[in-house]
Length: 79
Image 1: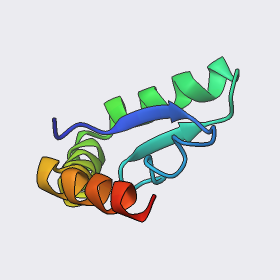
Image 2: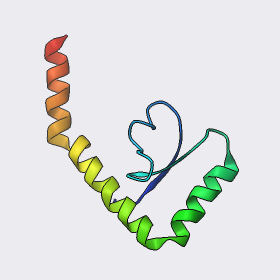
Image 3: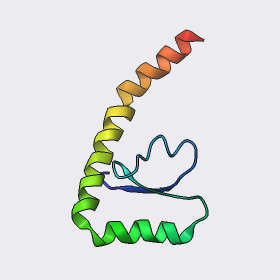
Image 4: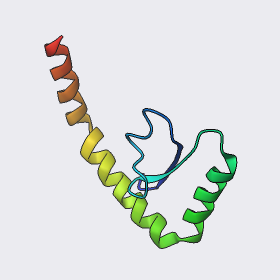
């Protein structure tokens, strides 16, 4: 959607939400850090826009349907 993501720093998400490239990460359960990440993005619309644009590029590059189908097909063939 072209927006930065704010996500908890847990396995699975940390591989997708690259800090300052796709969004902001915060320690699990740390509501103060979550609030700080959101406020930082809201107070810096230029950075928010830049990170959002890069997040979309990353998502399209890594997760578009044709690539996902190809990777799934490769996985199934290897099994």
